[in-house]
Image 1 (cartoon, helix red, strand yellow):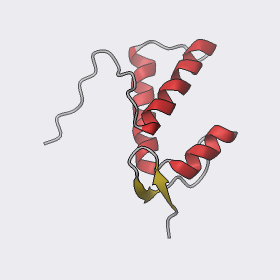
Image 2 (tube, one colour):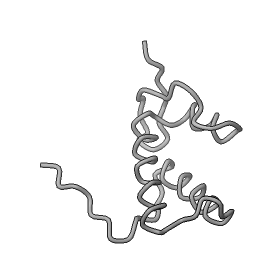
Image 3 (tube, helix red, strand yellow):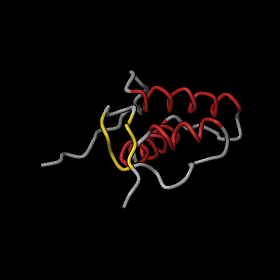
Length: 91
């Protein structure tokens, strides 16, 4: 039986992650409050942000920016979009 969480982003019970995505309190918070679906969507969005905004992950400011965007994204707040990104037409 899969583990469920009350997803912060979607405000409903959904299958949760099976392990913390990274160590520390933020990883534990994500494990306990973010669904697999929301985390998968965030990782896709994070990749778009890194690529489109040419972020250098060795730069502390870029990592701080992504941490802030992750928090906004997973909380359902307004978050930055990748410039020029056009979502697939899902028909």
